[in-house]
Image (cartoon, rainbow, N blue to C red; front, side, top):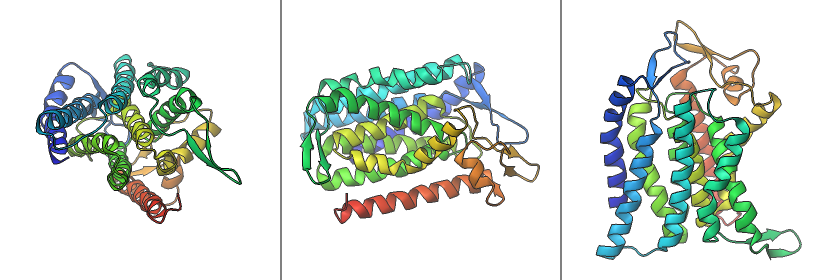
Length: 324
């Protein structure tokens, strides 16, 4: 697993600054809305994550085939990997078309359904659920045909909603995927662990350039891909309930967005002293947090990451004591 992490981290770390220069030179930039000066920052940073995760998965295959260090189900691993990459590709298209002019909301919900086809084809995950008074119950083929695509598109779009601040998306992804990976290690779910380690390596390297003040934005290619990764890891690792619980902050954001008919933004109103004020119209968990006290952007992100760490710790303890 160390080789998987190292290869994913190294490629992402070295290719991201090159990507930043190329994207900036071609005008593929966006305004940092949480800064008074609204500086132009390179977008499409999710491409480096796609490449980093890809080399990590390729490395795991090489290690298994030629060195025999690890054994796993290649079909399951590649099905989950393909689903993640397809969702990332959808995000790239959205980023290229342009913010607010790209893929519409209903398309965001529809397209990941097709990306879930590889996982559906290998019937990944478990079709057993524990029902009150009845115990374990199987829903058979309907799990892969209905719940798997719903899980992929649901997690992808949910993760995409809570974004827009330097380091927030990558930081949340690292914490959530690390929790899933630790549980995968403890339960012997090798395919889920490989994907998790590759994603963590890529995200840690990307965070070096995405942390405040960001030199690159991840865009939808990053957020949609992380959401799909959480879904895919949860499905092939039989951790569906854990995965759903870990993105609790994103479900809260969904409620805020739904109340405003998905028309609200997350950005704050930047002040000259470096702090942010909430949009008086609300419409986001970020605005609610900003209304609690005065935050700088960095403080706001650290607060959200701390909240996610607490959620992850609680979920892990529930798993550890077999309450999940």
